[in-house]
Image (cartoon, rainbow, N blue to C red):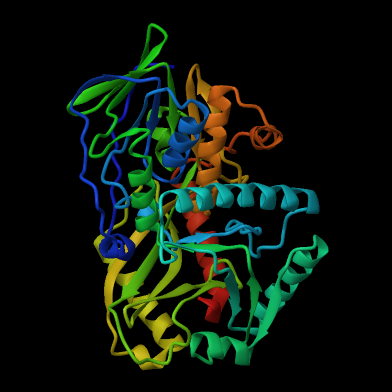
Length: 443
């Protein structure tokens, strides 16, 4: 396929608290003029930057160009909750412990490979513990059902020899300073990141090995004479091979259309506060029920903030209204107040939405989709890890770097078709809402 015209550009809702707190130390570069390269990577998020770093390792003498439509960390990559999770974490299911032992072991190995790649980058590029913190995470249970979900999860982890520890209500209260939770399940392998700082630190560290251009959307991508040519607003890039690290926007380029679901999730961050009953300086909670509330506390210089993420919606328009954002923020206010009554006078400073890309059969949109054109898209709700992995695997595939992990990652079906609209919108949102209602106090 050639002569692809990209009409839709990313639209974001609200200012991410992570991006607002992040301070970049390098200037924005915009593509200006015609450039020739050995490799073109489209997208400067987790997938794109990981692909570029891997290419720089495998082909150190090649010229690598990265094009980003907006500004790094202001898009999807700077809007997640900042969890890099090694153990199974399938948002499409009603609980986390669902895969077979073989599939679970493969997934864990892949996740840990991605986390190791990210850890190496964090060390090489001098990221602080506030940006990249290997602290582990807690699946927190606020109901008896949540405790049962955690117990099931623990049994599945025990069955494959994975380290974990159950926490009782007193231990949870000591960690977070609240009596809201009945118990928790701690797993040590997760890393907490400040996603905007991570993306910017990654890009700054990579800058000596790749040319990264922001505010340079690809408006047209065409194949001419064995080369790919990407047309942006003020210039072009020509390269024999291209890697697409653009998640759900792969559909704009003509691939996997009708096979991907664009899911929005929503988050709010408080203003900084002091001397409140919120436990330790830093902690990270995932809900025992996947449709519940994710809650994180961050602290610096004697000031703390809490970030809460709840609610999911499906939107084929790939954008949400400010009215909906405000309505969900009000729901999050109620959820936060239930957990921390002492924070009722601490307002939210930042409220935002972020996009996930899911497939019905929980597989990535991966592989060589056209001659010399590779997709590293559709992260299925764990973008920090899955997109990192997909970026590395795409670079390996494009350079002919064979491995057992690449063989396993490539040996997956294509994303299943999504029902036509408006049936998909009605069906997906109905399922999401029913699961959220079932989550109850976990949300």
